[in-house]
Amino acid sequence: MAKKNYFCIKSEKMSKGPISQFIEHHYRHFNAAALVDAAKGYETHLLEGGKMLVSLAGAMSTAELGISLAEMIRQDKIAIISCTGANLEEDGKSLLHDYISVEELRACTTCNACVEECPVSISPLDIIVELRRSLVMEESNAPAEWNGMFSNIENNFAPWKFSPDDRDAWTNQA
Image (tube, rainbow, N blue to C red; front, side, top):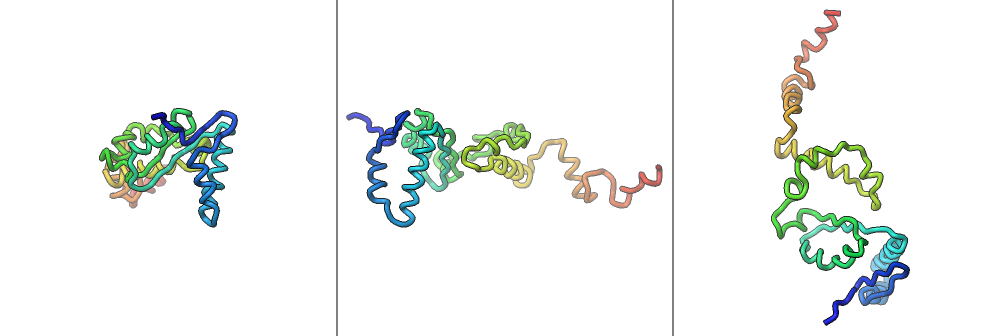
């Protein structure tokens, strides 16, 4: 049995496959019409050489998603697939440690280039900062150099080794 290509992506013009035909025929009213508008916008985006970022939430099979999106991936129409932890439940892995290592997370210089270049206007930098925060707050996993500072903040209410009473002692020496 021949494999059907439901996306029918062509380089100059997109032909309408059975899914597109179904949507255009049945999704005509109210909120459903917004899906048609979004699909047309995406079609224009692809025809202009753009790529897709697929962002998913909920308990969907990551393996099935790969199968469903394989043709689009092969045609280089999907640049990124981002999914919540619920999507990763099949393999028992988490984003932090299993897919992104602590070293990779700390290697980010927070230069903001990813935010400026993101084609769908999300902020990967916010995700990185929150993952770093989770490392420190939830796992007490901070670089060794920071531990002295954390101890000083806890004991002296500032990152310096001096107690609040001794902080201005240097002014008497000047």
